[in-house]
View (cartoon, helix red, strand yellow):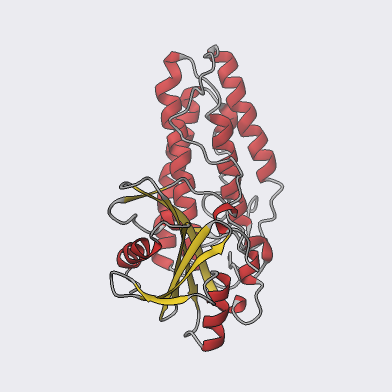
Length: 320
């Protein structure tokens, strides 16, 4: 049995809006402010140095540390004279998280060009980050985590891991249960017209990857939440890519995972042949579509039209 999908995103509380830099607290003196920056960066560096660079999940763990660091930084209220630089500093870190996530996804997808492009962007951002840290006087933040969090370095030896090397020694979601967090669709897919992506939240897809038959075929599993501009409703989007064509057994396993195996075959307004189940999960409906090596499912609160969202997502993804 599958769990309630509308409640299955892990509420980690790490992803925060960079615009909330002051968090409504009293601004610190410059000395106290810089001391807090140095503390956050030093703590992050210490945690980073504990990571196993040989672990296939190393890059994902390094990204998580950046996210946690950003969450801590934006709680610090800068003095007025440093606010502009501090906003640039935290915006830069947010951009690093975006590029590192893109690189992680590209490595998993064995997309050498995309991985290299993201790595190049991280080089540029890293240099600017160091300059901004220096301008703020936060010495502990200069080059923090730079021996691997951004470029995939093995750490300490001076040798770097080529981000375009997508061999099985890389961050492969089928290699280890520790790497089974789903990927963020907002990083790789433009929101359909009339919708916007909600902030990403971690999602543990270990149960999917551990399924007999289907699990070993899964190359990628992406998740995201779309908010409708028309009625403010939320739809959860799940996209699976497998490394083989759909067979009957694989199809049944996929449809069961998405809660629609015993549902009704429907045709969406856009002409897609899909399977729909009302109350597939507690308080939510599910609709799923598959074609080629791709599957797309939409989960909405019961009564919300998921078929229209499915059409919109398949249209922008080009998987129809």
